[in-house]
Image (cartoon, rainbow, N blue to C red; front, side, top):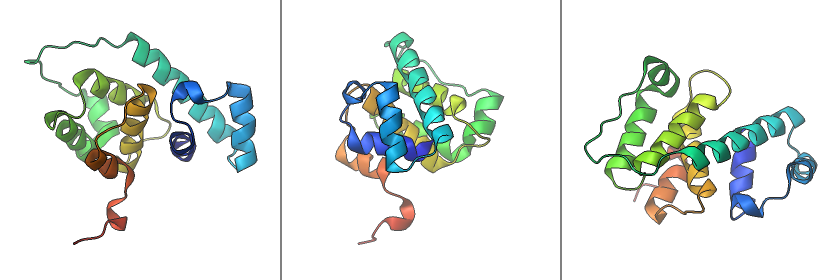
Length: 150
C-alpha cells in the first residue's frame, strides 16, 4: 500500500488532480501495482479524505496529546517521538497530527514502521494541498541509510 501512496505523491500534485478511482486503478495496474495493494491504498485514501473533512481545526495551545495503549502499540516509541518532534517544531499542527494518527491506526498490518509513518504524514500534507518545509520534506522522504554525512 505504501508504495502506491508514494507513487501518487510523486505523480499527482494534489488529490483532486488524480483521476477517478476506476481510471486511477487501471493506471496503477498498468504501472505494475497489484490489485489488492491498489484497493488498500484507495480505500485508505478515501478514509483520509473523510477524516480530513471532519477534523476540527482548532485545539487549545494548552492541550496535551495522550496516546492510548493501542496507539502506543501500533505506532511505537520512535513514531510517537517523531510526531512530537514535528509538532514541537511547528511543522505539524495538532489537527494534522490527529489525522496522521487516525490514518496510522487505519493502515493494514501490525506495528507501524517509522518509515511508513513518514509516508502517512507526507500524505496528510498532500491531501491538504500543503507542501512541508524543504528540510521537513527531506526528513519525510529520505531514508536515513541514504543520507550523506557532510
